[in-house]
Length: 129
Image 1: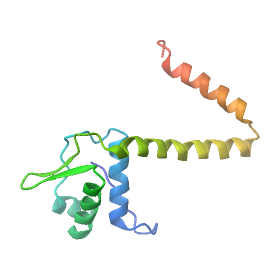
Image 2: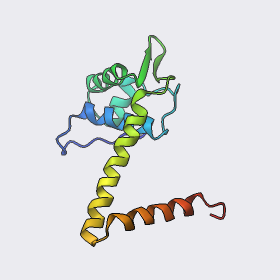
Image 3: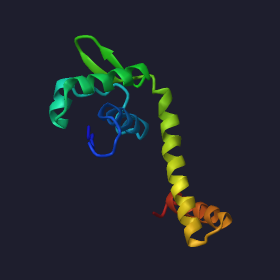
Image 4: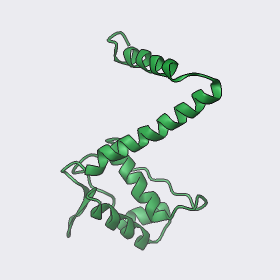
C-alpha cells in the first residue's frame, strides 16, 4: 500500500491517510478482505507517530471502510464500502471540473467536449485496441 504524506499542504496527516485509503478502496487498488499494515509498521514507514495512524484507522472504521478484527489486524471491509461509489464520483467530479476549465480556456464548447468524450469512449471500448 502506497501512502504519501505532505507536511506542507495544511491537511492533517491522519486525514491524508484517510483520504488516500478511501481513494485506494474506491479505485479497487485495495480490495475487500485485504489486510491493512499494522499501525506501528505504517507509522514507521511514514515516519509519523503511531497515534496518528491509529486515529486514521479509527476514522476509516467509523466510515465502514475497514474492519478491526481484535488480535488479527485491520482489513478492508468485505461489504464494499458505501463510500466507494461516492469516492469514485468525487474523483470524476474533480476531473470533469478540470476538463471543463481547460476547455473553457481553450475556447472549446460543451457540445465539442461531449463529442470528444463519445469518440474516446468508442475508441477505448473498440475490440481493435
